[in-house]
Each structure stands twice: as structure tokens, then as C-alpha cells.
Length: 471
Image (cartoon, rainbow, N blue to C red):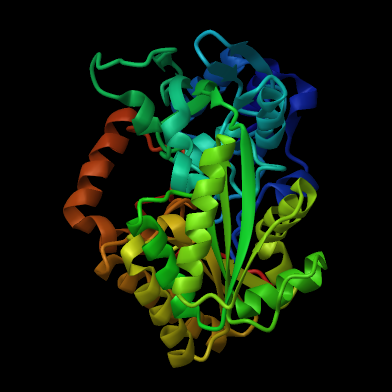
């Protein structure tokens, strides 16, 4: 609870215009993109610089007020929901690209920078920032760092963590530290940079980031392979990798997803096949052509009914855009859409796809599957209605079984969405109680008053969960 005295202290820091606590404002920031999780914050603050962030944190730490750093709210694990009230921290003023260093191939940005706008900015000068989460049109770099976001290009290029060279961080006591830098090598002490990437706002607040850039690929080609068997498509993924070809993008969509995406995008996607693989390769012209020829051969040998190569850059972009719209398209089917990201080793993709279908049938729930098949990151997506309590119970049973199956195949409960509050009850499946205890010890060391995004990652119950119907 924020007293009138504390409210005035916050206003003194950020200014009246950057302090919000009206019912409408609190409602707007009471949820993120995760279905069925919602709780009201006490106030929303928009600091104008890192010093104001530090002052806010010091005041919150003194009075043990929760802080929830928030980007654009595209989080899919309830990671930015204010489940214990407190302050939601926005970064709309910290939205600048501070420097592009072409000599060291780095870009220095504030956390509120839009992901796609940054990507487009560096591509204009022939450079490349590979991480490309599906939400990149609206997501912010700070959120990408907090969640260690992935994307369609993760197979070849890796995830956000692989491009974060240095950070400026406000710790829970209000002190500011810098980690890493514009360095190819740095082994001075613990790797705090990597610790904070993916920490979901539970250890501190990123106020600046140095990101690695690479030269922009010379060219790229896009291919669509059609299958009458989901398992044949899944097996093709393993075969492509086993043949030492690493595409930039290797995506999987099943027939229910295809139908919905085509209805949404209307670009001529096939809807009479069981599954498709969307494959993209980039690099030198000759190398790309060689790889695509090899991939096409593998697809046909693995049972593809047809292999089509995009005839133009426009057609290729249409295919990629359609894939990125999968969640939006599926969300139109039912009042509640639950997108998961169980991840397994590439060699287990076929087994995982089979298991998802069996689990969906067992619990009589509707699940469409798509995702980053090339890195084993599948997105089983359940269309349901939160108002139907009996069906929601079956959905939760199905998802838990999917997580258990992924872990049993050597996988994990989340490949890119994070743990947040939604997957906290399942974290022990991956880490065990000892692993969780080790992480909690780190959390306690950095944040003894537990003000940084509490009720995330470690919580073992959903007692804070508030179910709301969506329409």
C-alpha cells in the first residue's frame, strides 16, 4: 500500500506526469499477454533516466514495495503481472539508441528501445542483430533481455543472451553497476551479464545494454515443404541437422494452425496437408543456393509432397509474416488461448509431436502445434475458455503432462517464454529441489527484501492467480 506521503515522494522523483494511479491506469497494467493472470498494481511510474530509477528502487527497498519492470507486456508466462501489487516501472522515456559502434560491431541502447526498429536501424548500415522474437514489432529490448527472448532465427544465430555484451543495472538496493563491455573476451570474475539476462526482473533493473552486431547476410532464400504426415515433417528436421546443414530458420506448422493462419493472412498457404516446414537460409549467394538444394533433396527423400521456393523477396516476407502471426490467428478461435513452449533436443522432435497429439486426445482438448522446430522449441497452443472450469482443469492436466514428457526426453519446460508465475509450479521438473534452492540463494543475496518482481520463478502454488474471462 502506498501512502499519500510515499506517493508524493515518488512524484518528487519522476514528476506528476510520470506517476499514474487512476483505476483505469492500474487496470491497463494489471496483466500481460498471459491468459488468466491479473492483479492490480498500486501505481505506475515512468522514470526519465537511470538516476530516477535508482531513487525509485531505494525508496521501494526502504519500504519493501514490490517493483515490476515492464516492457510492452508481450510476456507469455505472467512474468510482468503485479501479483503482489507495488510499482509497475515503465521505460517509455528510456527509449534511445545511444551509440552504434561500427568499429567494434556493437550497439548501445536503453531498455525501452523497440526491437524491430533497432533491427531495421542497423540493417540500414549493413549490420545485423539476429534475435527476432515474434513480438518484435512491439516488444522492447529490456523485455527481451529480461526473458532471454528467442525467435525464428534462433537455430542458426542463438538467442538474446548470445548478443548481450554488457549491461548497466540498478540493483535492488539502488546501487548502479556495469557488467561486461565492448569486449571479445572478458573473464574478470563472475559472468554477471549472463546471470542477469533471463532473470525476469527478479535481480535488478537493466537501464542500458551493449549488444553485439554482425555483418548483414548477403542474401537469403525461403522454402516451404509440404507433408501429409506431421511425423515425417518432424523427422525431416532431425535429418537436415544430421546432414550438417544449419538453416537460419526451420519452422513447423501443423494443419489446424495452417488453416487458421491462412484464413488470417490470406496468402495462399496450403491447408490440405498435415504439416509444413518453413525453411530459410542466409549467407553468401553460392552457399545459400547449395544449402537450399541440399535441403530440398532431404525434404523430398523424407516424404515431402512438394517443395516450393519463394520466387521473390516479397513472397518470402509474406511466408515469414504469416508464421509470425500464428498466435494472433489462433487467438481468434476461442476466448482463451494458451501458448506454451516445451523444448526438446532436435532428435526428439518427432517423439514430442507424437506425444502432444496423444496428450491432447487423452484429455480431449484442442491443441495446435507450431514453433521453432530447428532448435526443438515447439509451441503447443491450446484454444479453450477460462469460464469453463472443467475444461480448464483438463487443459492444465494436459500441459503438465506435456512439460513432464519434454523433460523426460531431455528437454525443458520453457525454451524462450520464461518461468514467470505460470510455470513456477513446474520448475522442479527441470531443476529439482536442489537447483531451485541454489537459485533462491542467489535471489536472496541480491534482493534480501524480495522487492524485485516477487511471486515469479520460485512460487510453487497458484494462490495469487486470478482467473478472468477473455472475449
